[in-house]
Image (tube, rainbow, N blue to C red; front, side, top):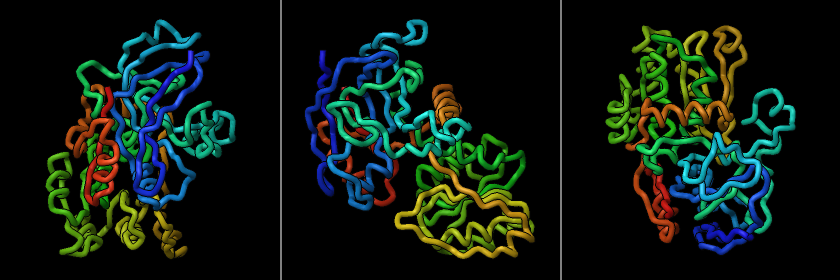
Length: 349
């Protein structure tokens, strides 16, 4: 029997429409998930606003939670049952390319070529009332955890991957540049690694929230030189680790300069448009600084993030700005694109 789905797709710049779709019945190893909450990431916002030019209609949504409505043949009954509450990993990895087979599934060469199920639309595909997924992409969540909080598993997983890249040690000084949702996630994770955490952020409300979430020191870069402040706080050495979570090109040289000898700097945010910077080879030679990046989570990162949220090691409540019902998805997108907004969540069912 065909599966009928209501999908909220971007059909033109700054326009979202709810479209009726129909796809085939469940196949081996698949599950039908009734979607309960979808958070709107920067990917969806950039397509909606026209910053990213992708073919339309585009079906976004990759921060998704819900419950299992039906199971296809081959689903393990010891693992999955109808009614199970789940968060879903919707980012695609082919499992066959060089990077997938060497454990770097977040670097999959086919990641942007996710197969489109018959009757569906291109994109991550979570902004629907129902989605069809492989059971291997499901992660259980407890009854006491809200669907809205669990929807933020994927952004936390991205930051887990970033933090794992630099192996934070007890007592190290960590600087987070930018107090958006990803900056706040980095703060919470770094504190749980035993670091002293410093946030550089212009917005006063975000600085206050950072202190509530565990930051030890906050800097207003509009009122003082953040590089000099970090050096003063570290006896002139510079930070052990710097995460740049902003998409501001001018911040990158600051982030590099904040690092001390043997320091690690992570360019976490993507840049649209790209903004190349100059780096001194002699500085790299002489300081042994490590400059690296971080993009997307692996399955292991997603599992760790899911466990931390489910076990209340980390709470995502204060990073949810507002929820909108599925019927008001246009308003949800408009709000999500407002500067300074934390996650907007669309609820269904």
